[in-house]
Amino acid sequence: MERNYLFCGVNTFKSEVGVTMTTQRLMCRQVNIFTASHHTNDGTVSMASGFTGLRFSAGLTDDEKKLHFLRGRFAGLTFCGCAHAVFVCELVHSLRCIIGSRTAAKVSSASGEHGDLCVGILGLGNLGKQLLLCLLKKTSIKPTQIKISTRNPESAEECVPPGVECFFDNRCLAAWADVLFLCCLPSHLHRICADLHSHLPKHCLVYSFTTAVPVTSIAKSLGHNFVLKPQYQLEACDTLDLWLHRSHLTAALSNPTLIEASCPLTMKGGITLHLNWICGVLCSLLNICTSACLGSSEALSLINSLFADKWMNNEPLNPQSFITSVCGSILKPNESFPWISLIDAQTKETPLLHFVMNSKSVQQSICASCYRRSVLAPSAVDSHISVNSRKRRKSEIRVRFFP
Image 1: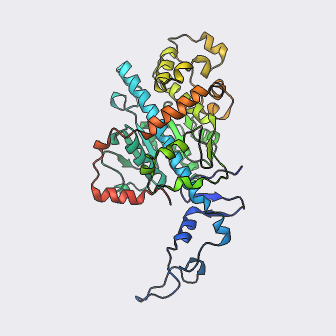
Image 2: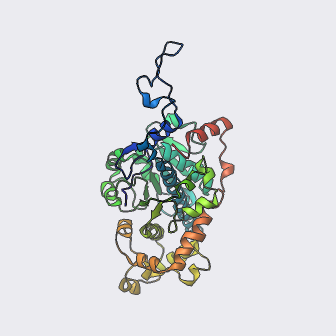
Image 3: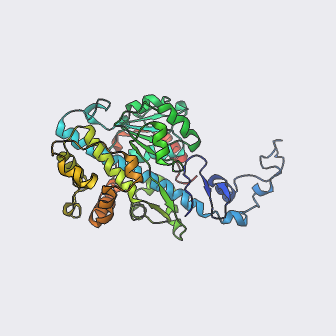
């Protein structure tokens, strides 16, 4: 099994032959974007002067051809990462809307008006831009519910639609957000976590894309155990090209074939995701109910309603699904569930892991019906996104599916 390297920043991967290179360099060599070595007519010197490997006549070397599969792997990781983030956001948003309609009150003191989900994106590089567009295109989250912290907010004007607030204050973003996406480089993660330490509200769900760093390390650095991180496993296969069908991620998210291939427990194309991630998602929903002071009976009813279909109705979630049989037997219907550590849910064998692992009906419900419904559904807020055509074109150019 290969080690995992994420798709953010320079997107460094390691191949089976032990050669490290960036997908950007591979792409540049493939399309030959550099000119040959010579002095141009206007007297300037070509950047490729003296580098024969960067001339038009130079193709990929034999060693580099072995790394061509990284294009498909990069595209697959990007697609799955954003699709799964959309899935989680839509679940959390739907649950909060149901809670708000039942309680007619704010879910928490740090939330927006009427219980609206507050989504923070920390970092607006390639991944942050893609995630922003995906959330606006594929969920019912409005632009006014999203804020971004980036080191260069002034340069984000052309790719951020009206309504989305952009600034540079990580602590302010963390204190405001209900869901906080970490879209930073692994090299920046330690500094960012140190900056956010002790500044995250307990109810804030931190979602990290930095696969190279274990979730336990992220939680320890943040001093926060409400952290969710997909741990993708990469496998050699002959179907990596299926991720290369589309140029833009938002268009790819409307492709049923790719949605099917990215279903968390039935993934294809050389990428897999362990059941622990699903357990983390379910525990996240339960903690949101606990944060809203809902009794255990009502919390389970709401969560089961999110996955209501012919499979889940046969085997609904119950107290023993999340906690031990002894604790579940003494938990009163009007008593809230205890706060569950997402770190334990994603790294240990838990009652929930055994429940989901042994229940094919629950797996089918979560990964088939609910996942497809959440990701394929068109956004209900397209009318709120009024970006002029010039900015929209620039945004589409900047936010490419591939590097």
